[in-house]
Amino acid sequence: MRRAKIAIAAFLLAAPFAANADPITLTFEASGFADGADTGAPVDPVSGVFVYEAADLLSAIDSIVSVSLSIGSVNYALADVGFYNIGPTLVGFGGVLNAPDSVLSGTDDFFFSFDPLSDSGLVFLYSSPSTPAQNWRTSNFDSFSRTIASVPEPGTFALLGIGLAAFGLSRRRRKA
Image (cartoon, rainbow, N blue to C red; front, side, top):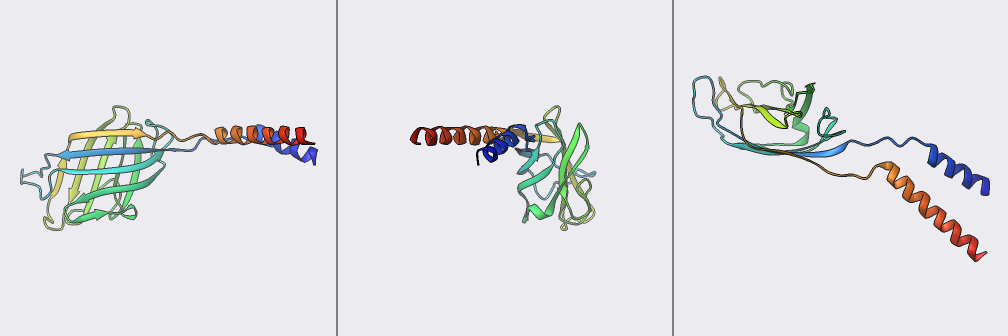
């Protein structure tokens, strides 16, 4: 029994504990949408929140956790949104109707790109069935922020577990 405990403790100490991706919350408001003819956009401003996972604020997007985005009467759900990582200075989100990095005119579609290095919004583009020949675009972001949630690393939990196990063993020895 003692050998089994020692083997388990040795495994826990030697096992590699990889860091998980951290949830990052991106909040924005974009305004000043226009088409090529400077016609007023059906919805202006557009604001939303994306929660996604990445190793850190400068890393590529690994996955999307949640979405809170409405453009007019369209409320986008997690299944409606994809992400793209084109390079270190161009990542973003978009509707999966066509592809996350492009917009299909005349549909409820969008894409939103930002630069992780400068921590700024680049472009928000959307289309609407009510204006089938037009896409609405802006590079004006009234607000843009990203915050990372601190999540304990798996190694922290392993050390806590080892400490509790050692404490339990020492108490058990004292009683015996």
